[in-house]
Image (cartoon, rainbow, N blue to C red; front, top):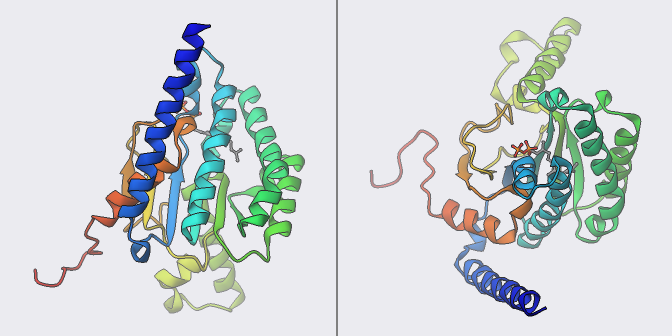
Length: 267
Ligand code: FPP
């Protein structure tokens, strides 16, 4: 009993420290220099669970809590676009049981969260080859898109059955179809035309990419759009990722000098 009480108060102390740090970080953030678009590779669910002697599915379920907190803070800060990598085209290689869990979590997430997403003005925009998903997942995604379509706050791009190379293949096919039917000429193909045929058409490219869990790679995510994105890596596993980490990433991001291949004034 005593140990339980000590653990409880230790947890309280940690929460209080985190709250103090959150407030401190919020004070340091320049609201006029926030990124328009944040992209996140939600990684580390499996390792988080295995380290606790749990099966990987617990890690994915715990990852929902992180997702909820991150969507909230991005919404509160007035971030325009948040792209979340939830299921890649390569994730089909995983055991069927894990795939089923991820599909079910997607459905559960949207039905549970839809009211809060609407209250916060979040607009859901799925990206990926949605036609290849099971009917239940497509139905949940359609519901979320329909219910949030008029919302004017954060646009949440949920990358599901998403692959960066596939996205480029789909764009090339769409452009080629226009060449064939005569609505586009070869000399009209430009960077903008390609961007306009990606799943993220009409959106700014990500300013900041966050990857938790210690791996330093982009894993077929937003290959075209990340050309000049700032990267921020963390060893924190996704299920432990919270608003405090987003704020840390933002403070770091705001200290960077973005030159986009040019020179800054005075250099
Ligand atoms: C990568 O961690 C994570 C995924 C493949 C799934 C991400 C899913 C969630 C965050 C929760 C579900 C959210 C929705 C909306 C369905 P990993 O399994 O590769 O972890 P590991 O690298 O430690 O093995």
